[in-house]
Length: 117
Image (cartoon, rainbow, N blue to C red; front, top):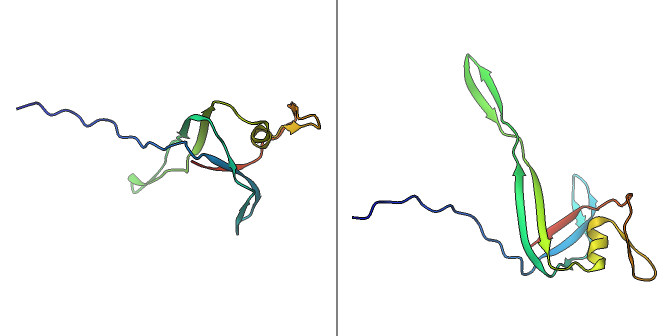
């Protein structure tokens, strides 16, 4: 009889075929509003990494009574084959001048985006 082996690591596979982004135009406690969807072609790889925080252990009656796990911050990284200037302008907060040249500066402020892939 063959010896049992450990199950392989299970991970989710999410396709990047139809990756789209939309700028967040308004975000209040009541609602969030998004701009027009923009297709991002050429997506090669995407990684989402939680930045784990230590749990807050609460003790009472000389025992561990409760453990509070804070919501983790997420880091999103992607590799793309090519990124059109219009999408770079939206993601990185750059500006495209009248000649169609992307201008980057130290004062650029990236906007908030929603993505779906």
